[in-house]
Image (tube, rainbow, N blue to C red; front, side, top):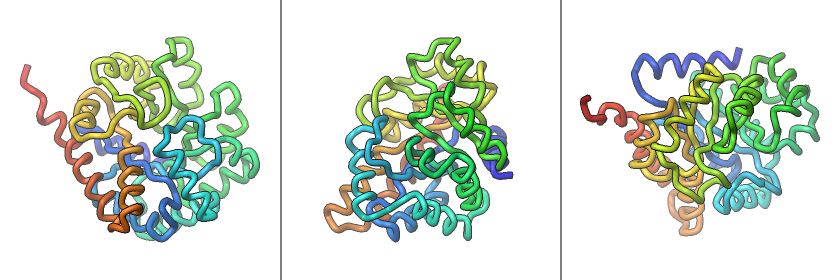
Length: 277
């Protein structure tokens, strides 16, 4: 049962009294070998959950940073099967860290929902975020994932009213992913005062832990969101480290993992730093 890894991780975090740090990288960026080194290093650097992107030529939900990461990955010839190969290699050494696959519906439909679900289950994936798959059209994919006990994680957004939140929650399992800002990744900054009531609404409607992503780049911002959410997702800031390191012929793995360590430390200590009331 792969979904069990997500449930177990959040149960442990609840016992520890802290939020999850969720790290996103694009599979195959800057290349498969470096991507695997980064992936394997993330848990020790502080990542509680990992989102692993698979590249698509038109990632409409992403800002320029992750768009370029997808382009670099595609230019290197990386396909979904290569990204699943990264997951399988990761699972040889790590059987506890949840892996969330993130991408776009065209790739899923081309493979077929049942085949997609079967293949990602075999690779050790625990959950899937398909950015452009609305809940009203997710039935075939949700059913296929249910059959192999993999979570489908829909996105909740600032424009989701209470009726919409209920609809999204119906086929969402594992955890709820709340997009903190309207727009694409890596452009605007998340505001914890705005995020807090939205997280509470999503948590109540879904009965799930709520992880907040988009607009979080610094340890300070990560800590602020960690005080009001069950998890903090950082993607663009890590992908920027990959791009900058590769462009300078520097140690990409070291740069990314150093950034992860700083962000994870901020998330882990966020609630301890809250003033007494």
